[in-house]
Length: 367
Image (cartoon, rainbow, N blue to C red; front, side, top):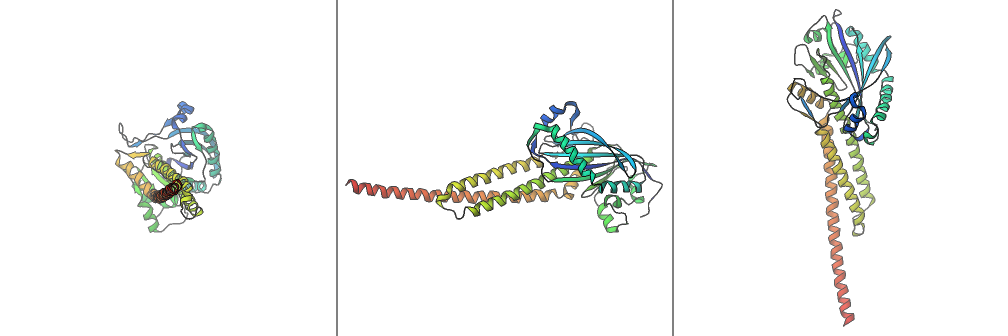
């Protein structure tokens, strides 16, 4: 595919996302109280007077102090934002506004940012500031090793003004989204374009595993917010899948350490059964909270983007993995409960036999 050098990207930006699991949950009401007018609740309403998505507890958005960086010899002023999600996730967003630029230079800028090792350090630094800001709104704070990264290439307008179809015919977006400098095979480009969605002739969303291209003349940030929300769900499910795996390992090790079931170990197994049930209940509550955090209501186009992102990120596979492990935990609890009940029955039978023997002994002694 030949490049059309006459087309320029007039207005655009690159959004760099880092998402972190930082706490068991975040009290968003406290966050609002701390930040007051500096914070706002996320709303996604593409059509006036309609609710595209219904949040159980909308995340809180606030702006941080921007930074200046030199990239490929050009000075950029980067805006920094953060979102706090009630189930313990914090996102850091670096917004890099890009002045008029040709597509080839936009590619080089994207590749430079992708390979810039200082980006992670800057995001971690910003995360430290966010943790201080959130303070006691964090419930059981603990920054885990789990994080997600995502990039959005956001284009608002072209020079000259052209429809999306003409742009895609004249420019191979796969080189931008796959960070490749050499021409790619048709199969690779076709697989990428299979993830394309459009509503109007002049808008477009192309999804990829770790980035997305959004062409949106209105300048609305709702589609990037949707993709960020899907990433937030992904990181939390990944985190709790690991927690569930560790809990199952603990359960298996505990059962092995206690050796064979006997009436003399009922107390130890009662404690283990209670621990298993607490784990099952807590993680069931958490996963339901994540699943119910966002409901699609009216907008079919936004719903398609959201569901496509969830499929691409394999969110359902992580949900299924957690559910399987929860089922195992429940089955282990059921097994323990039955064994405890059996041993209690044996203990009761022994007590009855001993009482009978004692009565016989007393009877002969008295006689």
